[in-house]
Length: 334
Image (cartoon, rainbow, N blue to C red):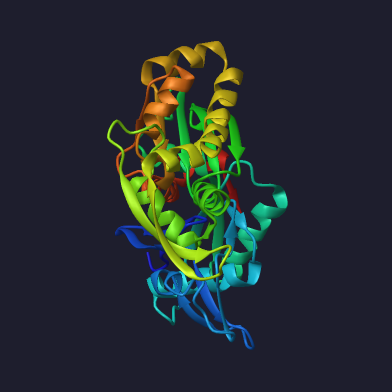
């Protein structure tokens, strides 16, 4: 076995790389910093994330993935090449087999863009797997059985709800609303209500520290720094957790709407299985405080967050890559 097999969870916010026989070897933000004149990659991942919104004129730091799909093909290809070289070394005799996951709502064109980017970056064969299926495998759900399992994978760019039975996706819904839109909602709220302009990184900080899907019994506060929209000068102010909950509620309702949409179209036999087992939540945004409680309250179905929700998709991609025969009907190959 000279050629390596790599599974990549190409997320909007974070990318994870899984290597056959080793496990997860890389977990970094999906951010690339490049020079403007010759398109040379300066930094990828954590190093590039620190540059967001802070770069000089000759360097651009950007997120090449938007809403779960490729927004900038050239930058994504450069990033995939960086990941493959980091895992296989700069010079490799045998090209690796690469499996990447895509949202179940991705169009043919979006899927082809991912396959082409992987092949151009140095893969021998590229496979695609649907994100909810990979998340279900990673969350250790018994998906091969003849019973319904429901998973909702909420990442940075898209939320995917799916019912899986007999190793395939029976019904799915994808909304291009997730963690990034939650950050945007916080930034917009600060601008409209308090005339304070804050960046995406500060908004994400607020979400992680005092964000909650439901109003907390004991209110928490945090100081936020930004630029005053009226005077244009730097300013700091205190924001409460109740305000954050109010700001992000409309975004969370859209994600709950996707879950409800799937439940409404699920065949009755599978619905009874789901009531027994509940809904499993995976992806980074599912770790938002009390989100599972909000989902349980609005759908009437018990919800719980999977173990290590951030790693589910990457782990599932790896398991599918090791057992291609089992999942071949759900995989696209090029």
